[in-house]
Length: 71
Image (cartoon, rainbow, N blue to C red; front, side):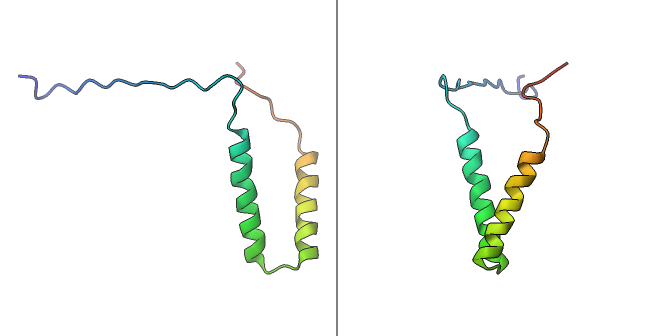
């Protein structure tokens, strides 16, 4: 009897087309999130601009993270 055997599972992977990246999509998600939070904050336009400038400066000051897996 086969009733206790697990069903066969087959995974079909779809390779990414050459040269495409999800980075742009991820950037858009972050941008929408930041825009929504700024809109909900109740800050003035000048305060929002200052917050964005501070965010950009903070990101520029961060050390670069290594790309890929090492080890």
